[in-house]
Amino acid sequence: MTELEAIKAALLRERQARKAAEQVIEERSRELFYANEALRRLNESLEEAVRIRTSELQEAKEKAEHATRAKSEFLSSMSHEIRTPLNAISGLSELIERDSRENEIREYAGIVRDSVVHLLTIINEILDFSKIESGKFSFEPEDFALRDLRNQIYHTYLPLASKKQLRFDVDFDPLLPPVVRSDKTKFLQIWINLIGNAIKFTEQGGVSARLSILRKEGNCLWLQGSVKDSGIGIPEADQARIFLPFEQSEQVSEQKIGGTGLGLAITMRVLELLGGRIQLLSNPGSGSEFIFQLPVQVGDENRVSQEKSDDKNENLLYGLRVLVVDDMEMNRFLMRKVLQRVHAQPTFAENGAMAVEILRNESFDVVLMDLHMPVMNGREATRLIRSEQIPRANPRIPILALTADAFKHTQESVLEAGMNDFLPKPINIDLLYQKLRGLL
Amino acid sequence: MKGIVFTEFLEMVEDTFGFVAATAIVEQAKVPSGGAYTAVGTYPHSEMVSLLVALSSQTNIPIPELLHAFGRHLFPRFAAGYGAFFQNVTDSFAFLGSLENYIHVEVRKLYPDAELPRFESHRPTPDSLVMEYRSERGLADFAHGLIEGCLAHFGDDATVTREDLSAGGSHTRFVLTRV
Image 1 (cartoon, rainbow over the protein chains, first blue to last red):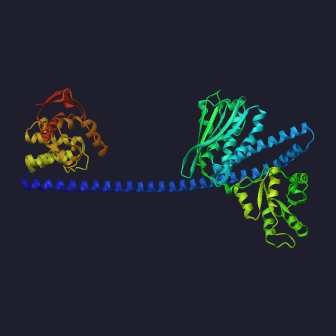
Image 2: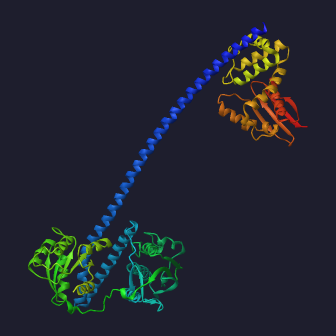
Image 3: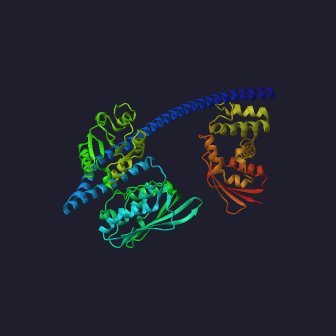
């Protein structure tokens, strides 16, 4: 074999090797292509899966939002439905308590009324909590006198404390400014919840509430309030839990003291809304002390609404011509009794349309207008009266709305509809008299 | 057996003994591939045996010596072709010690069908490395050559003593000692 022949043979081997390599490379390329295709399909199917999952989540979210709205509406309507019969129970038992000459009957009527108040507290707690949950809880500041608030707290709880033979005092530091600006209703709610709990869980000794200035930061005043009792106390293990909704201390559950388990959760949220905070100092057996701090502003004395709650001159209502518009017979009956007591002259209409009809022919001093009624509701009737389209009727006649809706926006919409004021149901008889006097 | 072993083998034969000798051993060996090897292919181990037998008869050099020489020749070619395995490795003992647990693991990722020998190694002292080779192919001479190629590649001066633990070169202990 010559060198040339050997080189030719080597060249031939190289050529065959190249072709074999090209074949291998082509096969690998094909494999890569198919692998890429498989990846692309997998990617597409993943994207499709994500699209489907996203739309499922969207649907679930919409369903949940719908359910939340439905829950809120249900609560609102249930609240209305429950308050309406409570109105009659509370009003009539209050009348019996005031007017009955028999001590025993007055006592029973008092128990009925206390139970109604208790039931209302529970309903309000549930409503408040659902409002907090749905973010509808709003901060509504006003100027109010601390002395009035202190008196209100004291007189609300003194009877309850006396009944349990507990010492009860409410001590507001004299250095406090006479008027502060904050959300009065919620400020009061904090005291009501804490003092209500303290009295509920205390059998001996007493309950004392204090309010003082913590510090001053410019126009902002930090107040410190405390409610101290000599009750059963709260074990350390329960101390964090009791601020959670629907939770109670173990011993409370065991002793079946009752309640919704929402009071402290609401108190804490209300305080957070007002920019404050709350702590608990407690040992089982030696009572509990709830201490809270919250910021307020120094208020303007001239802006405090002058409600003369001590003005009990019911004679002012003598001969007052009142048109009562309400579709519930029980409510009309209650109003008849309440108004006749102060010698006012009630006339009754079962709906807005009938009221408008009566106003064509008779003149009145004031209209008490229910909101939800068949045929024509209270808002429509008010608009019609205010529109000056009813011959002989006074378009500026004072109209007081009666509403069992606890929601603030309902109360505001009542004023927007042209009514002068509103009164929540169940009706507080003194408040009704007071509002009537205010409208004259 | 991976194609690179065959292409490197024939190149070594061509470079060392010339094209006439290379063509002669391919023809004598009568390998099914016709000696047309590519690095991306895989070929039967028996073809390497046939080529070695033919080369030995053409050159009168015993097969163990050929394998040993081929191992020495092949190591630097590996180092040139697979630089990634040599990054951050500064000496031969570190490289050889990581053979089983690093290099062979990586090789299996690239070539799942590769049939690799096993190397168990340990360092009784900082200056010595013990490697036990096990393979059904019985290529202890080839491994020996590769180990020496590795020492030369890193410029390390070490003696290699060899102890065959079974006949046929399928289980061999190498003891490397730094000089």
